[in-house]
Length: 139
Image 1: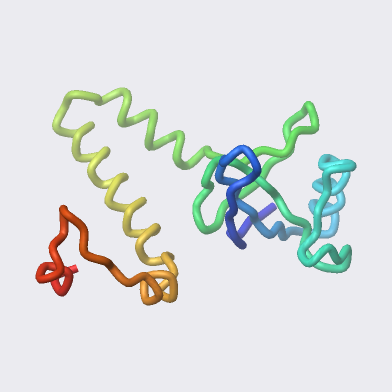
Image 2: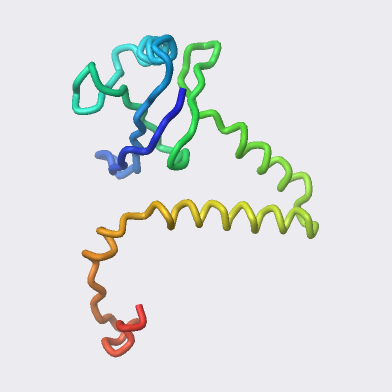
C-alpha cells in the first residue's frame, strides 16, 4: 500500500499527527480497512474516498505501509533503515560521516521542496531584540 501526506495537526496533547491518504489494490485497501477496525477514517468522512492513516512519526511525503502478522498497520521503513544501519556501522569514519551528511541533505531537500510557499508568504517577520528592523530585509 502507498501513502501520500495529506496534512498534519496538533492533537489535544500537543503531539503532531501526520495524516496520509492510503492507496492500493482493492485487496490491499480491504486489508487496511479490516486492520484499522473501528478506528478507520476516510477522506472527508466519505467511505467512497481514500482511507486515511494517522501517525505521529513523519514518513516522508510518500511512503509504503505494511500489515504485520499481528494485524498492525505500520510504515515500511526498510529503505531508511538500510541507510541508518550503514551509518551506524561506519560511525566515526569518513564513509559514515559522508553517509550521514548525504542523508541529512536529502531529507532537508525533501522537506524544503515540499514546504508551503503560501505559509511563508503570509509570515511577516517583526523586529525583535535579536533581529532589528533594519536587518529584516535580509530575511
